[in-house]
Length: 244
Image (cartoon, rainbow, N blue to C red; front, side, top):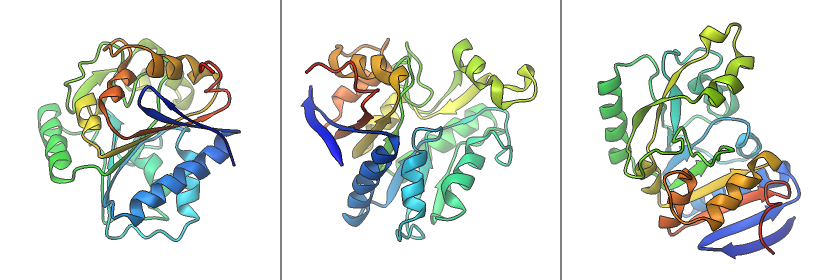
């Protein structure tokens, strides 16, 4: 199944043929953490983790005694809105694999209170395994270039690029959320283990920069260099700029 496994500047990098095989490799690592007693799973949304969630749905894993904590949520959308991340998680995972508790930021909550609440949740339920994607500009969660590596949960102004990319999901441009709540980089780094997934040629430069650049807040994913247990799963296109 595996095409290549490498150690690159402290990261374990697994290169597979395609996204579907990536989901299978990710699931094996997810199950290994589960079997070793992981109780709190940090989850991501978007198309990248969908093949992992497919594998989880078809497995016999039981999460009724486990906890999930999601990375982010749009400000202004209720959890039952079809474009909310709460709705995404219900459709892609929770309806078939319910957790004992599943935490997603509340897009309708008061900003100050919601940030306090979510930071308290992360203190109460330290993440054992965090699933991450990466943006084409190397953002992780909604932590865009320039975000402080010391940031905890915060409200983020979405970039014009993100808003433009999301327009296709909404009837009108003015309906597209302009802000989101996001775990901060410091929050993400507290996870015991991190699993970062990236597929497609549009992620190749971000992966290259994460692996080979010095740590800089202009490349948010370089913060992961401070973590001792990060596995990166790539398809061949996302790995196309790696050095031999």
